[in-house]
Image (cartoon, rainbow, N blue to C red; front, side, top):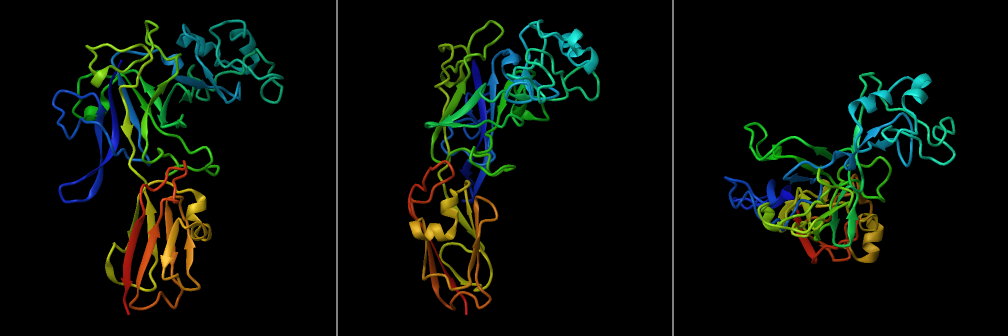
Length: 368
């Protein structure tokens, strides 16, 4: 059973500032206050992650794969068959010249077997034969593992969020005892699940492309292959109460809501006066914005962003990151002693197509 889920939320501090904190968004723990355990209605969109704490051990073979020496299916990682032992990994980590003998493809407990029609490594390794475990330090174990992409996923509305397979992992250690050093974030056993890069992001992109669709209800989707040691599928009991019951495979009791798309500006605030006419104005969004919106010409044409009065000729607008717009006035500056209004309409969307929930206006007045 899913006993607790920890994730990061945005909240208003006592001084009226917006900050973020990690809370129990599902379940609770002895000693946790209402501020530390409650339904999450404004989850952080960018660079968030879930710690899904399970009440007993799962079969790790269905959650992580080990690294091979070359691509063996759709990547260079291989599932470990249930029943395989460290000795099976070691015999498939041997030198290339003996690998066929120590790690035959006919053995159901062999790992890193080529499953590419026509062969692996450019055809040098025949289909059904071993490619070998990557073991550069020759300690008899795999040098790396990664999370299986569809083992556990975050689903927001109808959007299946990609998983960061390198940042996510299965941690089979831990229990409900809270250690002094890491606190609640060491509870286990746990699946640490992080959103992956948006599928349409440019190659090599990272944060802030690892984000959740804004203003959506989200939950978890477990692959039916993910089971505990008794073969039972994961479920989420009401409130994380493991003394209660839930149907195997049903995790619908857990859900959270992601913060809406929003915008802030520096060094200006709404209503600010005596703003420098020549300094850059930086607009920051709470999540990556659709390129059509963050490109000024397109934004102006579609009405997702408007400026009144119009920016003077020579103003440059760039997007140094997908969640940032930088407005640089010409050397002559913006008009003196003038109130400018920037309007963001609901045509503005994040990269998943989730719109600004309502029109936002930001006004400021320049100095002399």
